[in-house]
Image (cartoon, rainbow, N blue to C red; front, side, top):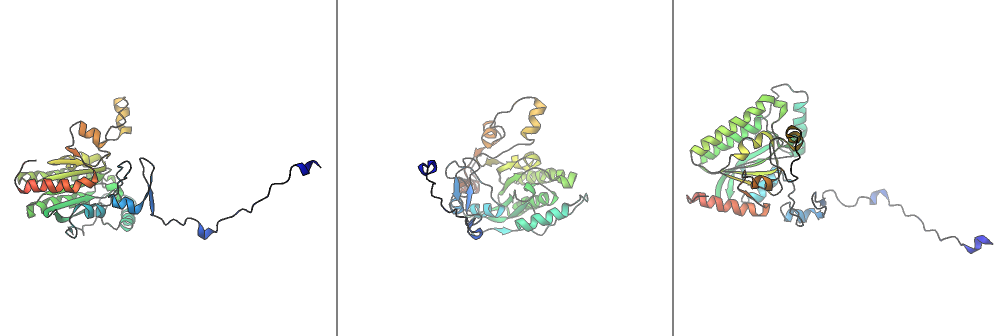
Length: 286
């Protein structure tokens, strides 16, 4: 018969994975590079200071991670960690939002401040954290930054600020915007004492932070590819009715236009800071 000319293909049983066998890869074991798409083991990523070994893309770091890779081991001493944010404008849901972020990040506010050493040289550092409401600058962030600068003056040592921010924290309105002037005034007093201020801009540094203390360093450094600017592309292009370059507001673009001193790979940052601190300690010029 005709059907005998076309024998049935042998059927193979379909194997359905047991639910418990799915997703065996533990969460956080691997990461995908946002630039080149390479899959990276988390341990390998940590080994390269959270930078992609293929394309040098710089992943976001928490404030604690940045302190660990920048300061001498065991030297960091946090201060002003008990200041609490209020809700001066009684913005709906603001305090509840803060509680959730505090729980998820383990931080009390968007900046970590303290003293420590780099290659044995004493410094005061302030490190903003993008995971805390995008590093937005509220009144407590401004207060902690100001006190950190004042502490640098007290200890007679250099000040280093690592910036990452989406700008002012609008839930606090004018109280947030006032922090720009307050921190800038403290840095002016630091300059009067001829103490070194190094500003390190990371991705992204925008809004009022860029318009104030982030660009006021004696030395302004940035990580590769960091977005640096005040208003964003979507705001600027309609206003000027022009298409902006693809590389607009990248660290390399900002460097080319004279607003940065150097773009530094993360692995090279601590050695560079050590060299600068050494020159400053010896009374050399930068």
